[in-house]
Image 1 (cartoon, rainbow, N blue to C red):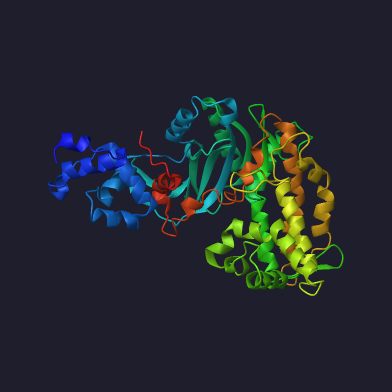
Image 2: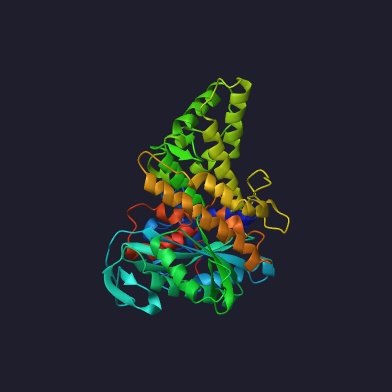
Length: 464
């Protein structure tokens, strides 16, 4: 087909580009085909989504081979430090944005990686050891990677901004320094950091405590300063839902004097719901989570929901107390946890509007629950007893207190930027797994290839 005739076809730009590739390379030898950079990037985006699908498409269309795509990724060198490439991408995305669209949170977590040593001819360096960038290296083999991710609160933009191979876990004193470095780098491109998010690991708590000691704002517990600017640190609330669910699976939970909650009550409600009418979202994956389902927070969040509370209440009322007669205490537990969850959560575009899940305003429901936080937490933590995991239940449930107190501080510290701040705890995209696309790569992930995997996991394979 002549090029003039090809350009006259009314098709999308992507289809036109694909036909142009076919016209230019189909008759050439496999080793003589030539590809433009944008063509490699487009092919790479397909390969990233599904390597199996990409191999199938290569059987019917003229596309670059997998080695060509991997060479593109290998040409992008990202050292264990704050990535200047991603800073430029983020600056370009927010160049013409309003100030409110430049408000961000910094999330950090550790990703498991297999030990692996590789030699870089370009850098004349052995990769795979613990490396903190400009702050030095150690002789220990890295088996985890500490990743920092930036999430803009009022847009869908999020990018990994730095990564550091570590052995087991990052020391608290070093983590505090790295967090300060990231929080200092973002204002240079116009990004305002108002909060940081992490799980409640011992090293994370130690790092925040060290930063807190240098802050002179005594009225706030989880607030620290970086170059004179206050930053609130938020602990993962959705992770506590998962821990509570996992503890409730093998145990019975006593709360509020003589009230008893059992996992069996939820199973009984599920059977009634399946047999009579479907009014809840419960599925077998909710009742018997195994494998990766045990790590998914949204399954636990859908257990402790107001919808399940109302469903159990409805069956009990319509049957004049014959159905689910022993499950009302369990229903009360679900509602109490749901209220706590809403009090430290923000609205989502995909969820139905709820009075308790809203942006912080002077008259929002958020303050009402904040005033009740002691009562709500005491209902759960005063008499927490489990058959097999008494100590674990007590520890996890008492963490609700710290979470609620920190959440209350958000409005006091950042009153102008607070709307949308708690969206970081959206159950559809929770902070406990901010790097789930990266960990989905499986056990084959090694420290020697972590730079490549970070690029693939972002879903933004951009070459600059």
